[in-house]
Image (cartoon, rainbow, N blue to C red; front, top):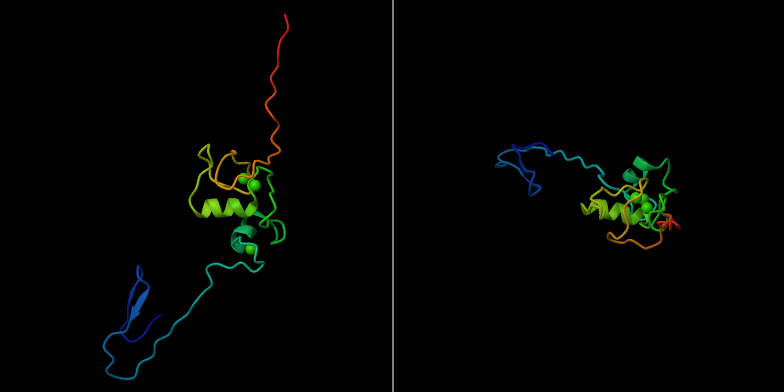
Length: 118
Ligand SMILES: [Ca+2]
Ligand SMILES: [Ca+2]
Ligand SMILES: [Ca+2]
């Protein structure tokens, strides 16, 4: 916003004109900073950052099959969460199990114990 001797407090987002003593014009422009056009709960910009389209990731998909849905990974990273190994959530990189929203369904191979016979 500009015009009329404005002051804008970026912390409170409050715009104030100066004293109005004559006709003046305030000009405002707005831009979308977040959109979820496919209503899957994942910000479209983030989907397109990781995937070529908006269809790949959804609330139920689990692209990297780490037991966190793509939406859960988005929510966890939005909340500034790290996985139990301290890594950032990434829908294309497997995260450690046991974090927020982990379903317990991973396709990690179970550890194999080898017993050596004498
Ligand atoms: Ca979306
Ligand atoms: Ca995942
Ligand atoms: Ca992941």
